[in-house]
Amino acid sequence: MRMEKAGKWITFLSVALTAAITAAILFLVFSKGLSTFIVNDGSVKEFLTGKEWNPAKVSELGKPVIGALPFLIGSLAVTGISAVICAPIAIGAAIFMSEISRKAGKKIMQPVIELLVGIPSVVYGFIGLSVVVPILREVFPGSGFGIAAGTIVLSVMILPTVTSLSLDAIQSVPRSQREASLALGSTRWQMIYRVVLKTAKPGLMMAVIFGMARAFGEALAVQMVIGNASIIPHSLFEPASTLTSILTMGMGYTVMGQVENNALWSLALVLLLMSLFFTLAVRMIGKGRTS
Image 1: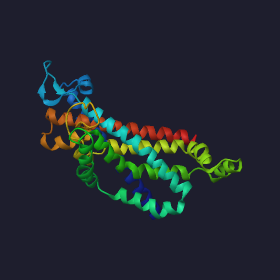
Image 2: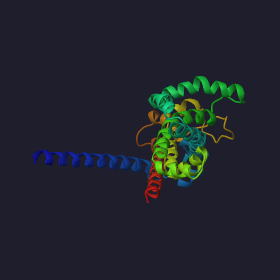
Image 3: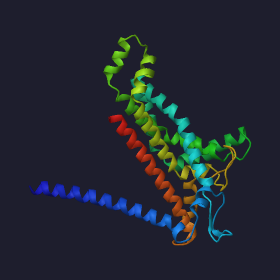
Image 4: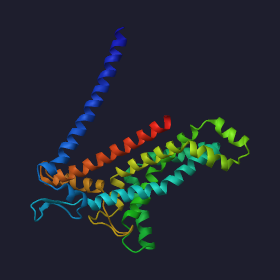
């Protein structure tokens, strides 16, 4: 009885501590992020649509210049394009490991995926800086830094996540459906396309969304290759910035409570809201999958 009560209390305290930490983080980010608009009289419209970022400067209306549109565009562009590039490769690798050659998948592909997961972000960024950026500089006009370089690095970074989740989704398809399709005369590729992929579609969508969430919050690797220019790029090969790159560069050079620091917290609030959006999207897809 004592052990049972102790186990219940330990479980309860663990859940309570997790909930308290989560609530504290949400409160901190929301309170600091909203201070830009409540305390410093910043404009939400200017924040979402403005093109100039200089919180220390005051506009003609007496409001801080906090145009975050270039960073929003940079983050969405890098995340979206990397997902478009990564998804077909990851799903194709998952199909190969599950439906084409399971032995080769376990012996070759699985160790490669596990290796990619274990590589630190700074290593990806350094490889991008040393390999991807010079290649882009030679092939395309410009310095090589930009959304294209960030997209290539992020595509490789999220590939293991999307591949692993896609593999789980494909393997969850009942074997009876495969056998029924083959019994009706379908070829293996017809069975994969018309049965396996269609049945696993919600799980594959969840895998891609998880990958996008991973890409949207990545900071160090992207910062090293994107160029960190606070402007709206007109091509994929021009320097740009993301929300995370501006945060990592500016947070150590601001004073807590000042408008510059509060503006960075507002960017962090946007990141948090996007993370919540990705989480809700995954949960909605999961509910539709189980219903």
